[in-house]
Picture: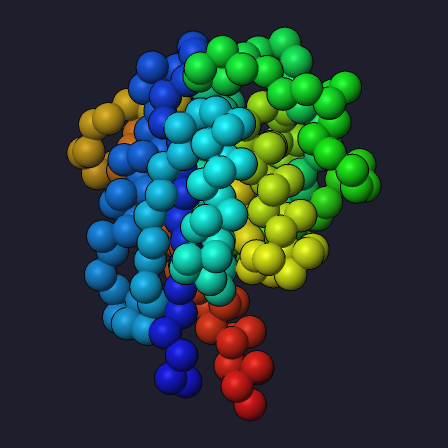
Length: 221
């Protein structure tokens, strides 16, 4: 295979109630990975401000500029103690909590026209197993919330539906973690730290790269 794969990896900045969001650190570390299995991969990193306007403006530009073969998105679920691989986006948005600049999205509780849910696809199970192989607690989730994380999930899946984004995408919610880097025996017990998140996310990243490589190979044949 001669095509250079392009993988877009995204996170979010801090937001009201979460002055520290681990996903920028996580995304930056994933972007710096040097592995033999990534020899044909260009990894693009982007961290969104936690605003609807930023997602609306920046996400279409990223898709048009880089034309990624796959998209791996991360967000913070501060009240969850395990890794959550989201299986779908809901056409729902909260009017209760403003974004980081105080804006609320109008629309009567819906993001926009379209179905009530959009699924990521069966590959979410493969990413889950990859993350679990590192010894951490990871589970599938059917509810990405109704805030910016779910909003980005919806925009990604809607773009794929319209042919404006990659068909292969995933969203992983991570817990709020300690920043300690000391390795721990597997399986991991107790609260996760950033090193645990990096290990599990790297496994998921390698899995989505393998799936993207297979899809691109099928197209080239």
